[in-house]
Amino acid sequence: MNHKVYHALDIAKYVINKCTCEKKAISNLQLQKILYYLQKEYLVKYGYPLFSEDMYAWTFGPVVPDIYFLFCGHGSTTITLKYDIVIDTDDTEKMDPIIEDKREKHPWDLVYEVHAKGKPWYITYRNGLGDKRIIPKELIKTKGKTDIKVWKMPKQMDIFSALPKELFAKSSNEQISRILVDFKRAYEKYMRNKEINGILPKFKYHMDSEDATIIQLSTSWDEGNANLYFAFEKDENESSFGTVWNEKKNFESRCKSIEMNDTDDIIHEALDFIFKISEVSDLLR
Image (cartoon, one colour):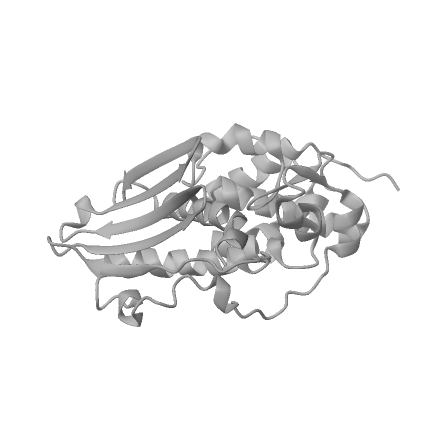
């Protein structure tokens, strides 16, 4: 029996159109995960791919690069576009339950799911060694059913343990708790499958002379130092997030407003920074 195999762009347009029309618009990050789950469903359950393009192992999960770059201008905001796209009814009946289920999940929950140890992304990515490499369709077909295991964060990875619990409570400060809770949740899901040889530095906090709450993670090694911070001001519009990476031939400094930027963007940038630190963590023991 012949099976119709689509182009990934047609499937992406169908997913975006469906979510937009049903007022459940999704981000590019969610789109990539939904594409993966649709492809996995077809490979595992039916034995053939839904679309012909390969998916690649990127830092935050499987990606169809051409689709990612087409919609990357949306950043972490939702894609509210409509398309006149026709997909066979037999296929939409298979796809719709998956789309409707995955779009309701938090984006970082989807990241955690596809990052689980033993799954195709994990096997391909190999803690960064396989970055940007193709995730073979046959691997998705054979390893796509791997169960998710219960995970407890190792002490050497817990960068939040030195922070008072009240900082995470809304009753203390809504802006601080919102950022910290979302960041910790994303961090835990992201780090579940990381192999860290050394001990990561921990966040510390203090009040500055103007009563701003400073939450800061700093570390240093023989050839440089790094600093990530959140400065929560009394006027929330003045609160900021920043990173500094200082090596002999590589100095990078960034600072941005917390209120003027999307929380997911801030978390994404903070996770990237933590990932850089984890790569030199074996020097921090």
